[in-house]
Picture 1 (cartoon, helix red, strand yellow):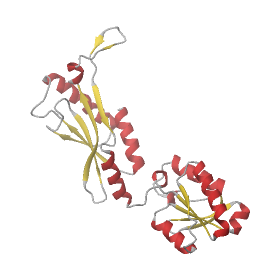
Picture 2: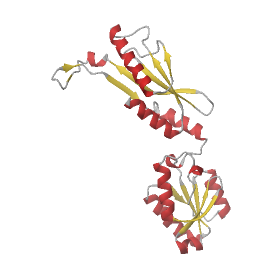
Picture 3: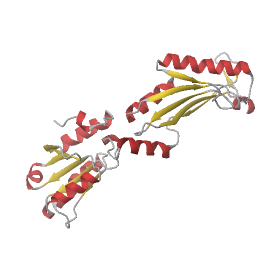
Picture 4: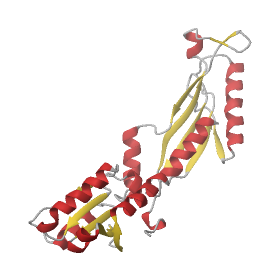
Length: 248
């Protein structure tokens, strides 16, 4: 149950729905039939207790034990088998593994193979397709871009960027003098920065920033400290869309 609960927590945070399959004894297998039946019954009971719909996948288990396969769908509705939970009662036997129970008896353990993401590269590819480049703030490699309206405010932009970076956020400051303000904002939006912070004389004097999103939704002025609190909430809540957590 712990593995299934952990899996649900991870995939819910990513915004995925998932399908569960119980893969049972293949045609060629190791071990005795009684042990297989016991292991399959244990996984079936766990799935029933978990309370989510699941399907039987006869004969698709590993040669050393049955397993629960978890599939998710990408943006094109293609299914990918990512996570898996497998019961292995063969390796403990072959390596002669034992443990001492609370009654002082030696018993044989069962190994649980647990892969939550599966292939990390495949998971990143699926996430990239699913988000279409618009990564949620808590997962984004480009969270904040600070844009000064002119060279006179480069130092303040760097100062704001430093505060955000020190607070743990992926932040950059665009102080390229070869681009106009509009071009800098547009570049940040195309680069899919979740938030673009414009700063000038008014913001420098009051210790604030002018906030807008990559979708060009303008939120207006906000103090850096309040913005950091808002960003922390987005991260803590694992918010998938910034629009569900409006700035105050």
